[in-house]
Length: 265
Image: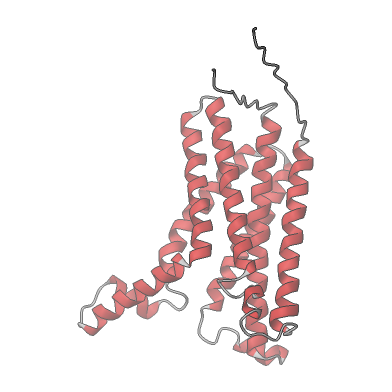
């Protein structure tokens, strides 16, 4: 007796703009929730346990906020890989390579954000410079370590991220042909640049003393909430760019069909 296999197919219709807006709304809600948890649990001490409170501190590396930032970076990386798929379908090899490189970069930054790679590299840089200084050996590392006013990891990361950020901006600017998406891109990049600038200022010695004198608040309070603002702006910049790329992909690819085939028996 012959066996016949019935195959069924289903279609899921997704609005490009609606999908991007929904994901952005989710990211924005999670970001505000992280700020709320930081204020209520960590800063105001709603939970008295000193072991639990740091979990919700956006200023700490091992926290809910930092995990959320890593997720945002990973989503941005995956969005870039989706664009690489689009260029593969269009047989544009070099443009596919561009998106793959940015996908790999943002995926690495997701790993970096969760494992403190940048801080460890900065500490290693300072350690090597100190060894050279103790041995009375003058060199570029010693000069940079003595003259650089902020965190040492900026010396390693900022030239790379600056060049990559400019290239990424130009790539997206060329892809986005309309005014509104370009304005969103400008806002997203501004959030990211301002967040990194706050991080640089944070590393300056007594950088907040003028604010302490002006506002009259404790330095701990000012430092904490500037760090929270930095993390929040970084999240908004990352999520906005990721949703822009997702919109770009879904609006430029009319349909994408995946065939799941069962092995023949």
